[in-house]
Image (cartoon, rainbow, N blue to C red; front, side, top):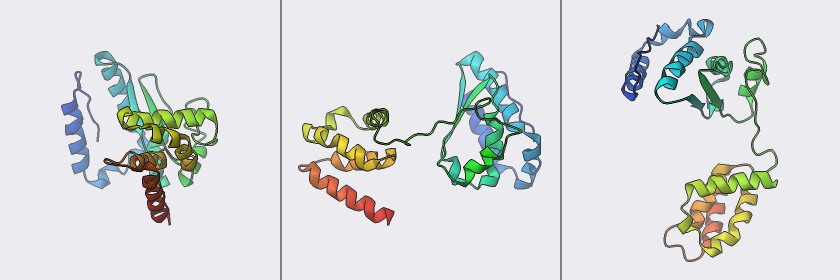
Length: 196
């Protein structure tokens, strides 16, 4: 099932390619794990995109949400060429074993690096990262002096979870909020219930 990349790729080509892939019967993909076509496709796309716009960045988020058996193509693209840069985000778990057991294909430190975020959630480096992540999502005008006082406490409570920090800040900055502390308590109770 070869894909031909045109000389002048545009967003329309990607939309058509996505539709074509979605409509293709599953049995057509049976030989793909052995053929390793994804790195070749990305290298070709990367070379074409580089001529038009610059480097191709491939972002794959929440890779741990799929069955580890289906991560083989993801590991293949970690063996990167100069035509593209791949970034895969996943939580520790079974999926990490698939990457660890792929020493014949992509080798950590040679083909890719592993960066662990949130290992030291009380370090200043992590606190700074969390503050930047929250600031990127919440308008500065919504951060009142009262919320400013609670900011480091919220980040301490969130530990290694950017999502938890954003949810708590969302409660703190709720529209029409008169008492941010009360809102924070409601947010913590909501998180506790959803976790349990």
